[in-house]
Image (cartoon, rainbow, N blue to C red; front, side, top):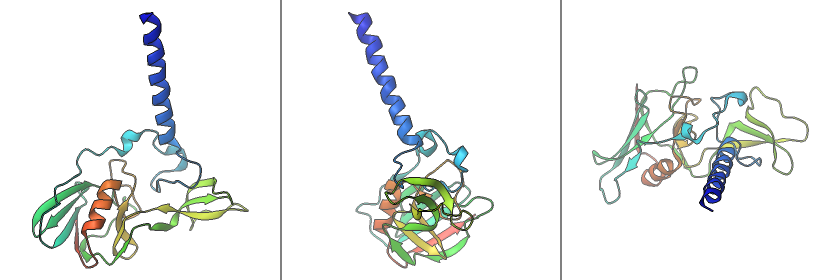
Length: 204
């Protein structure tokens, strides 16, 4: 009896693992782009490990003082301070070589919890099904009968021009078009702990 139970349990485990990987590959076909503008459609990573985050943490609850954020491009991390005390750290993916994230001293100038990109996303049909994924509206033409659905950039914190911090995919290196991508939980935490006017320093 035990010889039959073990293979069956293993088979169920493998089926579950395959289902998980499938969900990481494509997700829903209804406009659920992961803002993968750094990747060609044929080279999108096929594993959740590409979005692994082992450095982010938050210890800022109950800490007083004015907030400020330092974004370090060299180590791809954002440091959140309250009154000069380090309150949390977030892993990042910032601008790539062709779309560098601007360095300097800025301030949060806009907060938009449910922000969507007006440049990158998908072309979807009337039912919301993706017809063409991960497109750039400045380069790609919409197929007949489709509309543009902007990529989700939730918990958007704009600090200069079209650039801001927001929830997004982290491949483990600088890969965005200039924005500062964060893991979802860290983007939400930073968002709820900043206000318009919060200082943001971006250093090389």
